[in-house]
Length: 251
Ligand SMILES: O=C(CO)COP(=O)(O)O
Image (cartoon, rainbow, N blue to C red; front, top):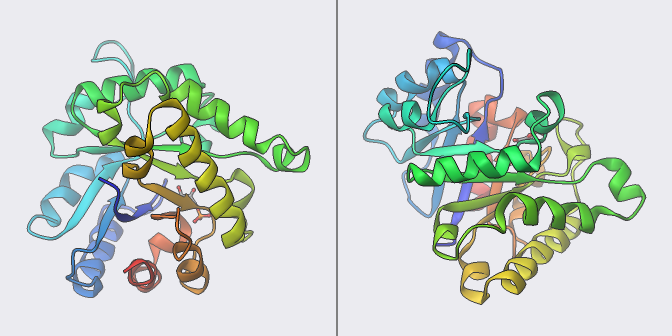
């Protein structure tokens, strides 16, 4: 069901002790209301202890990636079953850093989505254009292709476990944010294409998050747009006060 979500993607930051210090601060400072779902995605090595640490709170834990195979000789990789076995039920798939630095193609990502859904996991699927696509005015095509190749093979029913994060690559970690109007334009486009492929109920029930230099100073304006259902936060998720302020902006 469509609802507000604020998720912190911690990327390759925070050691074990730093992870737990930040979690303690979040537990102390996050609002207790349940209107906004709060998710944190620490690194793999800290997932199990984060789940234990957050037990009894409203904060969910997500993984930043997973492998598409059920298991086997894939040195260094992590399977869906390993994640669910420690209580991680949400996974970020298709982040632009995975696409760019680790050559993850839409075909591989579609496989990862299938595997995650087979294990009843929820997927936060990231899409977004690069600066060159915006400059050449190809950004809607790029976004459509990512949607089609990563998600449009799914059945209508499977969409209940899909959350989309629109993250324009040019806005990630750059301090350059999409304007609220630019975010709204793309979010409405994504919803329209889901409606065209499936139907209104799928489109209206899918949460679509914005990511890319969201900060306490711009969160409220971005989240106020009708098709923006929350955010996927990078840098600002590493500072408790900033992340809490962003959660409050979504409330
Ligand atoms: O990539 C992001 C979240 O997944 C966004 O990162 P920043 O908020 O640091 O721009």
